[in-house]
Image (cartoon, rainbow, N blue to C red; front, side, top):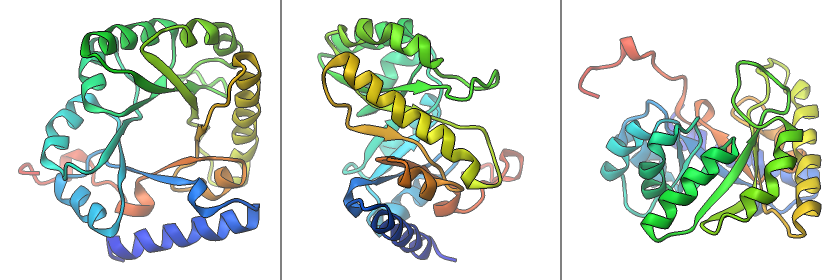
Length: 235
């Protein structure tokens, strides 16, 4: 299947899911996950109409983004180390993976130096997995006001990576938990949070039914990633 065909199938599935859930189709945006994808594949996706892309690693993004069309929009979606915040603030229009007050403070400092305001999502470890990054829900609520007071940070919503499951329905409680947590955050802040980033290639329809506004899709669009040791060294 070609990338163009995959793109159209994903768009169709989102339209059908939104109709079933009573949502407008344009209320959900696909973020194409480009981890390990060369600039040529990014360009091919852009030619299909894909605009929003996400990278997991700052160093890979730093090398790749300058080689891609300038009209594209980029979000950072991986675990962010404090020593990479300066580059992340310069490269991306949003950081989706803020998981501590100290990280938010460092992003704020780097955004101040860059003279810009940084939209962020707060990453939540809704299932409490030891292997995953993200705020425990209670800690998020405790830190929320302090993050909101950082003058160069704009909280736009929440993000989660639920446990891997083969049955998408088993991810539903985690998506629902994030949606409920967003409502709690809105009540605490007294302001709406527009985004829920949740759902990936295997479960984005369930996430859409539960209120996702951003779905992070890699494999369903680009196909399975080639292991690093099998890639062409020239890529």
